[in-house]
Length: 377
Image 1 (cartoon, rainbow, N blue to C red):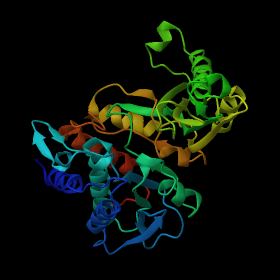
Image 2 (cartoon, rainbow, N blue to C red):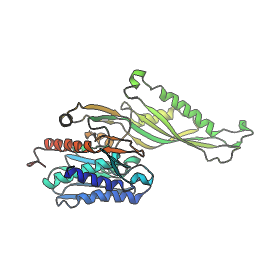
Image 3 (cartoon, helix red, strand yellow):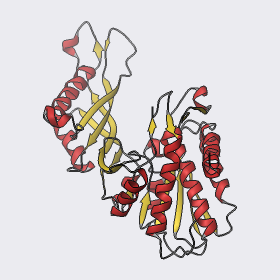
């Protein structure tokens, strides 16, 4: 195992030990601080700390740089909830297991080491490192805040949070999460004709929405290549009613909508509202636009050369923080080492592919920033 590999794995294991979940603000702060500690000793680096909505983040770049960086590494340290044993990293064969290993503490360890190595050797290199702690809950207080409120405008963002080693993301679906709320009239269930059952009303609206979204399904052949159409999922149902013989006067559901690049979030919200009756309201709580980007051909070539395998441009159903950059026409590169079991008890990252990914990014930076680099890192 190389020295670089050892440093990356040690940082990754330390990060996994921290339960940096949305329900643990101290864990989020601890994880952000741990990454910060790994780069703050570089004399040429300036670190700006931020906190929006209780979510810490930082942006690091060369102290001498006036303006935005040309290449920005972007990563998040927040993870989804897990049992305590999920935060104990373990290595089995060529995989490192633990909550966040693949999403995306392994990649955070990688880009942190890359940033440290390049800036230690070339203090004025126009690269930056952005670490946030709210990607799993929407990203509005992390990347969204730094881009939209603090004016971060890199020439290019590298976000190793999707795809795979030879699969580079070109499209991601947009996301809308929100509540459907139906109102009715409560009463005794022995006389339902005197009431307006809110649950019945809500279910009728859900059925109407589901049928409409089902109409977007593609042919059987097209479905096999990715189900690339708008979808809706009803994820929770509830009512305030706790009495078994009472008709509920209100009911709500949480829905999750994924939509392709042919629509905007405003289009989709308007579509939902047009289908609802006059006693049902949709309250969007999270909206994000689809990601559309064209990966740098230089990156594609280098990936192909180092892996000695073909490169595939892919479409992803999940969202990422990349959308905050692409909405401003800032190109994004999204690929990553081989990972699996994301958000499960068996989440993992492949160790060998981590070093391979490190080599890809290092080679890309050397070529992309060749005019700024005098000596190899």
